[in-house]
Image 1 (cartoon, rainbow, N blue to C red):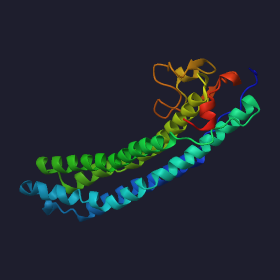
Image 2: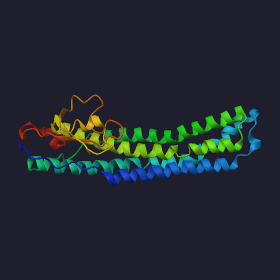
Image 3: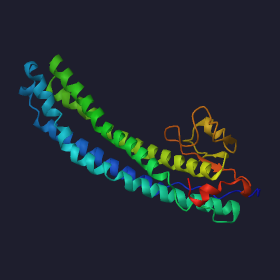
Image 4: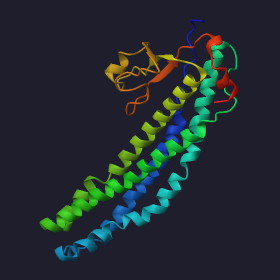
Length: 259
């Protein structure tokens, strides 16, 4: 098999930014709803015998965000399609550089299942952004009522955590884009008949030392490192450079689109 360095498998950074922007907008709606709730709070509302009503008023954030949540979740299929198309194009270019031929699968019967799974996981993560934050706020309100905390102190406590949804949303968008890109990379390589890859990373200050140490080392898809293949660890930006098998060992059923 040829020894030339294969074309690098590029990362869909523009699509990642699109997802970050969408989730950032959603997180800021959570913040806006929280600010609105804070404006409505009055010191007279702090009555131990009306704890349930008080928490209900603050947790009205839920109803305000339901429409935004559903709208965002409805865009997940489109994001998946963009990432998959980008990944498929990269795969085709890598195969071309390895075999000087267009050995790319004509259709992918497995892709719908992958889309359904990724969309479901991301929908739950998106919902949890609002739910977790509201639980945190509810805990602060409950403690304030129980302990006789002043309105000013409560508002200050809530403002201290107001950026939680934004930070969580960015983490989800970046990590889930990376994970999907890595998952599709593995699927397409393995289904073609690729069994091994070389670990490749960014080799910058943000990369984990243990991942830097793996640079250029050979791993088997069937035997991952202790923390998983590239992109599996949270916010892992590494990727798998396929080790192309001899052309006669490739899976013709994959190329024909039969699996």
